[in-house]
Each structure stands twice: as structure tokens, then as C-alpha cells.
Length: 517
Ligand code: XMP
Image 1 (cartoon, rainbow, N blue to C red):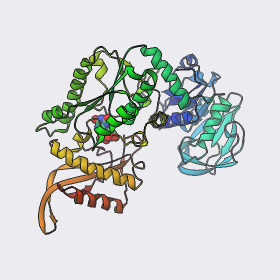
Image 2 (image 1 turned 90 degrees about the vertical axis):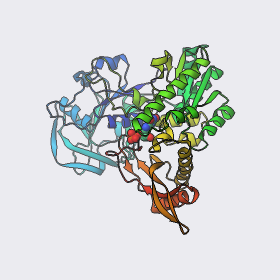
Image 3 (image 1 turned 120 degrees about the horizontal axis):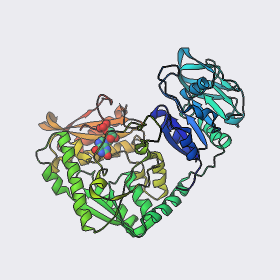
Image 4 (image 1 turned 45 degrees about the vertical axis):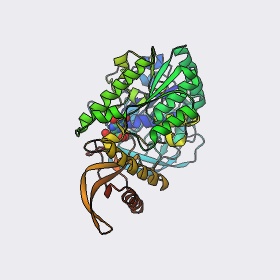
């Protein structure tokens, strides 16, 4: 990667850290998340321009409260502490932190006492978001009060000479509408960073890097049809054209017309070297009589890899395998000298193309490994990928097979494809597709009695699942309007002769999961 100015978030609580890093990158400054106790020498080696000490669940006066390397405070590297980060730096530098009388949570009016430095160019009163129990009650020597609220005297404070600042509120959340300006001020004014982290630069650098890395070699990519692998395909194709070979394995569990749509996009539009392998017969054969969810997943995963191996062999010697690994999966690097190897929790391991390289001796190429999902979407759009793929909801590797409870047969896949198509198009028409995390149908293994015309029916039941979520780790059922649910239900029953009942799933995760299997 070309040299971009680097700001680092020290991770004292993963969910806060990732959001802060994404916000810094929105300011076009490159940002990485590191373990909270990374040694300052490591930061210096990486020529870090600024450090943001994140929020976190701990209290600074707890016995084992997590700390940063004490040398950070005298290193000369500019620091911005947020919430716990502010309390930590205040305590470490000789200030005083106390539990508040009551927890302050929610919107507050921030009154700025010093409209320079981190508050440069901002109004004297801002809305901010507070979420804290502890408070800084005494400032370290050299610090001045920069902002206050009704409840918090030192809502922001800093030592401009040392370039160390702390804010008690959360500038990274949307409820602090001008928070991004504060982060920009820190990055540009205090740290002196240049805003070079742009999609155009990223594409240019990656194209150069991919060319240098692979030379005249061929690269193989297993496409899923989702935004990540499609973006990888477009990017690598831009770099090396026909040296890229894309393989799509149709297991038979895609959405209605999806296999054809993928074919159209890659063959007609992008004109890439594209192999569409129809392996449906094999998968249906292997899944005959299988109802156990884990067994289903295992069979699908194993046969995916086997099919991939067989088809890859036919292509002769291809040394490189491209993958759509993203930054959140990468933030577990064991940085030398830290106590935590793992910073962010990993989302449950799923069947996807991971696991292929170890078995097959490929060298890996992962051009998205520095990006967050929202950055991938912007990149994909800039590379000409259509909106319906760029904004596609997550879709599991085993496809509709894990949304068909009980045996997976061709007939049952057809029913679910038809129903799924109705659900997706109605959700899109109503403007809910991007408001929810996922919305889909599940085919249940029970038939129930109904009445249509004057006739008794005994047909399949469909469950609708729609959830809101930020990262799929937790989720809540979406409060879709009754009118929308009514329309979906009517269309399903009217247009699908095999279905006479529709139910709505009102469970959150935990204790349920998003998918039913
Ligand atoms: P659960 O069901 O565990 O799902 O709440 C969390 C998120 O992961 C997606 N998911 C998968 N993604 N391969 C994938 O690539 C899989 O096997 C798989 N299973 C679940 C799910 O759709 C949700 O977004």
C-alpha cells in the first residue's frame, strides 16, 4: 500500500473501536484498530500520526482496568481519548476520576468553552451523545476545560501543548451530528494528516499492487454473487484482465434467476473469464433424506470444496486464489508485545470459500483485507457493479438449503424460490430492503389445514423473518408495518399453490439466530 497517514484506534471495547475507525476513514484518513496495550515503539515503527483511545465497558479505578502503554502520554504522538479513553488519560496524567452520582445516558447540549483546536469552526453549542457512569472531576496539570454540559463539567478537555485531548461524549455516533467535524479537526489540525484515503487512490494502488504481485500468473476466484466476491472480481479484472478466472458453483440453492443474473453480469457486462458450474444434481443427491441442520451444512461445505477442487484441477496450474476477506476478520493480528491477540470477536464460522487455500496450496490474494463493508460497497459502486448487488442483504453460503427446514428437494427449493422472490420484491417496493439487515422466507416442514374457495386444503407453512442488526452478532425482529406483512402474506398464498399459511417470526438474537438452521 502507498504511504497514507495513519491514525490508530486503541481498542478498549471492540464495538466502539470499529465505529471510530470507520469514522476516521470517512474523513479520508487511513485508520487501523490495534490492541489497547500495543507498545509505543510499535506505533513509532508504523509512523503513527495520531492515536484515539476508545471507549469501553471498564472503570479506570478497577483493579485490572485495561491500560495503554504509559509511554504513550509522553511520546509526542497526538492523542484523543473518548469516554473511557478520556478518563484513562486523565487518571494516568494525574487528574481525578469519580463515579458519577447517576449514569448519564442520551442526548445532551454541549457548550463549547474553547472554539479552537478540536472544536475549530464549530458553533458554540452542539448536540452530543453521552453514555457514562464515571466522570473526570479534576484535570491533570496543563489541561484546560474545552466544553461542558449541564451534568458534566469537563465534557471535553485538553492540553494543546502536548496535543492530548479527551471528550466524555461520543463523537463517533450519529447522535452527535457534528462529531465527524471533531474527528476531522483531530486528524487534520492536531495530527496534520492528509486526506489521501479515497476510493480512487485505493483502486489505483491495488491495481498496481496486484499486477506487481502476480506478474503473468493466473488468479482463481470463487464467486458467490455477493458484494464482496463481486467487488474482488471487478478489481482484479481491472488489474490483470483475462489472467483472472472466476468460478461460480451453482449448488442449486440460489434465489430465483440468480444463477442467470450472475452469468449475465460477468459474461455480458464485465466480460471476465467466467465458469458457471452447475453442480445442483450432486448436491441434491447428497442431501437426500438429510434433515439435521449441521449435517446439511457439513455436506454442502464438503461438496463445495470437492467440486471446486475437481474444477480447479481442470484449469491447469493456477498459483493464486483471490478471496473477499474484509478488515473486521483481519483485526486479530497478534501485535508484538500485546496481551490480547484477539481484539474483535469473530462472527460464527460459516461455510464459505475460506478453508480452500490450506488444502490446495494456493497463494492468497485478498485485496479487500483493509476495508470495512461500507467501504467495499462504495468501491463496488465505483467499479461499476450494479446497485442491486452492491446493496444486497447478506445471503448465506449454503443458500436456501438452510432456509428449508427438513429435507432439501428440488421441488421444495422451487417453492421457496417463488416465495422468496415475492418477499424480496415487496420489501424493496415498500422501501424496507435497506432499512432492515435481512428479510427472507423460511419453508417449514409442516403442513396445516386451510380453506380456499369451499375446499379444505392441507399445505405448507411459510415463516417470514425480517431483522434489524448492526453486525449480525445480535439482532431484533423488524417491526414491519401490518399492511406490508398483509400484502406479502396475500401474495404468497395467492401465487403459490403449495402454501396456505404464513407466520411472522418475532424472535430476537439471542436467544434465536437470524437463520433458522
Ligand atoms: P446466524 O443465523 O448465525 O447468522 O444468526 C448470522 C449471519 O450470518 C449469515 N450466515 C451465513 N453466511 N455462510 C455465510 O456466508 C453461512 O453458512 C451462513 N450462515 C449464516 C446469516 O445470514 C446472518 O447474516
